[in-house]
Amino acid sequence: MLGELNEIQIRNILLSHTVGRIGCINGNKPYIVPVTYIYEENYIYSQTNEGLKLDMMRQHKEVCFQVDMIIDMANWQSVMIEGEFEELRGQPAIAARDNLYNRIFPLLTSATIHPHEHEVTGEPDNSNRVKPVMYRIKIKKMTGRFEKQ
Image (spheres, rainbow, N blue to C red):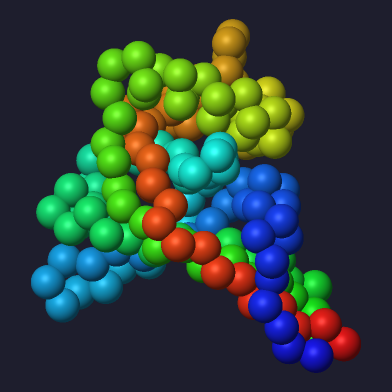
């Protein structure tokens, strides 16, 4: 059976996942990349480094965002969001980063778990997990589909 997800189902998927894909475009070049995120009210929050994705979103603020929950090819749910990129600075960026880290960091494996792989001496360096640019996607439209056998 194919169907559409209702708003509660869509929000439950967004709240229960931490990895989605953001799609952006510059001219005629599309770009899709996975990102860690949190969902709060009418926004998707994430962080990034300077680079192609950020350049594209700064130039063309309309983006899309997708999250999937796939059990198998006949049992899945997918949420698609249309929204607008907003770069955060100052206190809004600090608050968003705190919320993101409180939700995402407990799920990450620390460098101390496998010290032989990371050559850890003293305190582990988790600085690669901190990216300098915080942003959010203001949700304009959310849709969801599912298949269940």
